[in-house]
Image (cartoon, rainbow, N blue to C red; front, side, top):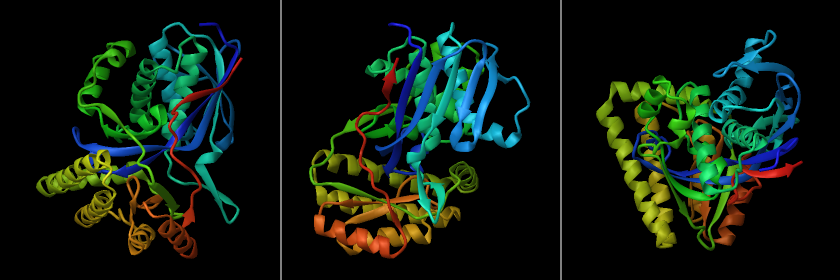
Length: 379
């Protein structure tokens, strides 16, 4: 493949449709979609060390070297900036460990599409900007260094490398579904990798290539077709959630009452399996019933774990969808951010949107993205 001097890559955000929380346990399925709000990464040739720019955070000109395993900053970087650099740092480290020989570069990542402006202030809306940034940066560094990124095999490499980078940068929490959405696009059934297996492979220090080239236990992605007449409405509650902290609190619930934890997670997983079956049969009525059931199980999980999973804003969003004969629920970990409504009726869709807007819910204009990570420009 011809050597390039500059490349621009983008990756879409994510939306969780069904199976939240339970997907964290190995073997449990979740239904995930990619949305056409994108994060961008630009890589261009330079001499000497790596240069990192994150203009969304006001971070520019961070010079760094790579010692074969880690990125080493060449000057003092404040702790607050280190936190914001953590995901792109992990992406670069994983990419360069996989590549072996590499060419020096400047990398820039940005993603205003992942934000909404409320009263003059821009806020993230919960579309997985960190995962999309990792995927975009990963693909950009790999492509700049000669790898193709369009084939299924290449995307498998991008997804695994990005899953490793994101998981480690986030403090070894999360399922990796957002990374998969940003890589592959579309709608799919997702089963997470076995984190214990992955951490053991990393601990053995075998190198990045053997890990990526391995079959990952439990890890599975099964595409789903879009159902004709189905519309997904997305509403943002204007509240932000700290997913990593919520996961840590959920771990406390698991440790204190494993039997109840397993019961609710099992019920959520079984409900998702029913949704997948109904989805394949295009049974719209059954899908709406099961989405409502998924919502109730998530509410129960919140009550039992004492986590504010379904906030007041998310409750209103879901109840307005149900009042018009459709189904609504939170999307993702809850605690704020986005909720969704499954609609098979255009008149109901219009009414739901009007009700959301009157209640102060921000209606997000977006659609399902079926392309995944892609090259925007190559020179």
